[in-house]
Image 1 (cartoon, one colour):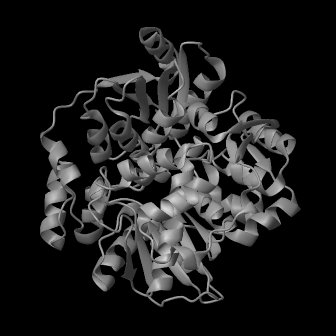
Image 2 (cartoon, rainbow, N blue to C red):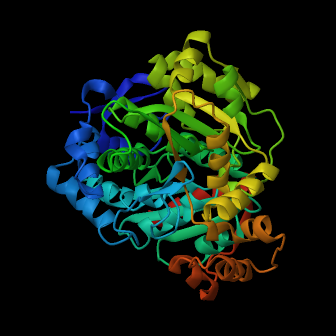
Length: 485
């Protein structure tokens, strides 16, 4: 059986079903798969497989306490009907590079690739569990709606999503606040995403119940992270099949990164045998990850910037902890780093660990002005409409010193229509008061259709209107748990 260990206490060893149910360890640690390099995925064997078939090949490596029938059922329920493109994650050209399009799911963002399957995995894992499941989720914009869609009306499961009141786009906010479902709750918090994330982790560490099991839909849950490995293999298989790369070639993935989950999935793919040379971490003005990868110093003691790429407005990147453990295998060292981050707001890794990080990762940051220029350049020169997060990665792809001449695959994480106003402004200098007017203007300008899942929310009633202070967050969770018992 594949075992999962706690990054802050590697004596705690559990199976995948328990790791998915728990989400976060009681001491704040994250679960990671042990001995990940024991089995490699043979690229030649997956060249002609569908997304669903590749997903089974990869997930069965990690989730081997699920039966074949259980796992295939989860995969087909997630991917057979919920995506508007039959390839699920199609690959397309943008100049000399490629775009990996991850926004063809039910909420038009890459989080759909994991959050369409996580609810099914959780239900299978909980089949022998008597207690109710309470999903706590912090979102910087996209995770919230994808999680709500995945879990709404699930029997025995309730979900609360916390989001920063001023830290998401108007479309992202409307997507969440119009969500139906008898078991859904959306609450805006007076703070930023890091505050929301700390709130969720605090509740994990300080609240326990025999009747209600806390779990998470954030990438702190290993069940959210593992499905994201699939599209890295799918992209490389597509290039290999069309003759753009051979068995001797490797590629670079350029990933817009905030909480480090998406790019960490790429690293796990590399460990499994995906032909990846470098993972390029693309940051916006909140460039804490860029600075860390270049220097080994992680320092959140800096100005927090609200940008036009809000899903990356993060100063505490949770999944980095998993990378530190995977490279060091030292839970005491990782625990000390995390303690220093909590108490001092910074930590510094040793030279040996930094060298290991830099063997697989590069980093580039992009300011607001250059982000807008990339949106304009992609449309004017390449005829591609890209969102504000993809634009950051597009910039990074151009500024990464690709000495080996490997193909760059830019990970495109959201539909541009989720951020219509900044994109319209970048292309025309015009900004609309109403976000939906900006959508329509962008559609008229480009001829590219608005995704139906975004178009329809303008007419839906707003069902969730609650805003709280950060200090009241824990009490809100306790009150909800009392109702669930």
